Amino acid sequence: MNITYGSYLKVPQLLALQQPCSVQTSSAEPEHDEMLFIIIHQVYELWFKQQLHEGDRLARALTAGNAVQSGSTLKRMLTILKTMVQQIDVLETMTPVEFLSFRSFLSSASGFQSWQFREFECLLGNKNPRVLAHNAEGSPERSAIEKRYNAPTVFDAFARFIAAHGHAVPSALLTRDVTQPPVESPEFQATLLSVYRNHPTERSVCELLVDLDEGIQEWRYRHVKMVERTIGFKQGTGGSPGAAYLRTTLFTPLFPDLWAIRTSL
Image (cartoon, rainbow, N blue to C red; front, side):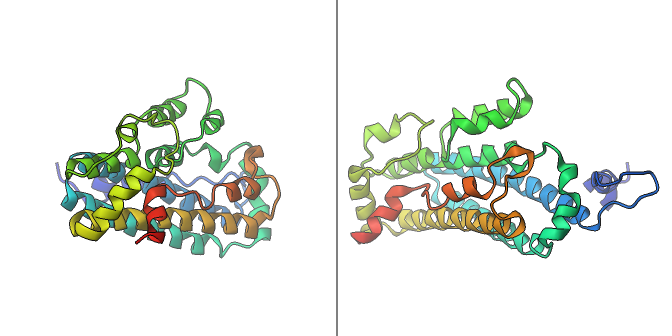
């Protein structure tokens, strides 16, 4: 079989997936900016898929104590994250009036229903049982989120990475309830202070995790401001809370101990 660029990447199928809803009659043209809106969000879903792919590899590498693979995977995730943030610049070329020209056609669809993003949040340790309600009980999408919700996080893999390198990690961290958000541990912070001062290999991985944490917070902030810029504080599509809720997700660290030790270094 002769494999071509188009057949390998399934380009014809890919280009057939952009189907604007703002067509009221067979002869009418869809609203111009709906195409941009669809493509941006489809690309985000592809990036979420890749971030989950990389995040699972990161968790395995950390758990195994593999600093080299952990570092290279984190660098890739960070580069992808920068691209995800930059895509907001493209979306912000659409004015509020242009968005409103097709917003009503979105009906009950909402970004809150993006199960891949919820999976990514769970993998990173930001778990909120309320988000499960955005997808129907028993649906494949909800099942995917529930599986991630009940699984260990990158934080848990990080604790095992530190332990794998022979450093003291509180047993409570290694056996914690993984459905709960990480909380600061003075004992773990004492270990991390020693790591930072005496073990450059482990420290380099820690700093990349801080970069990831900061990058996720930057993405959240840009997302909030984009929503505010587009619809202000109106209710989001599909009845979602919109910017008011998104603001509550800001400045919540994924690795609280790595931030807390800065004061003592």
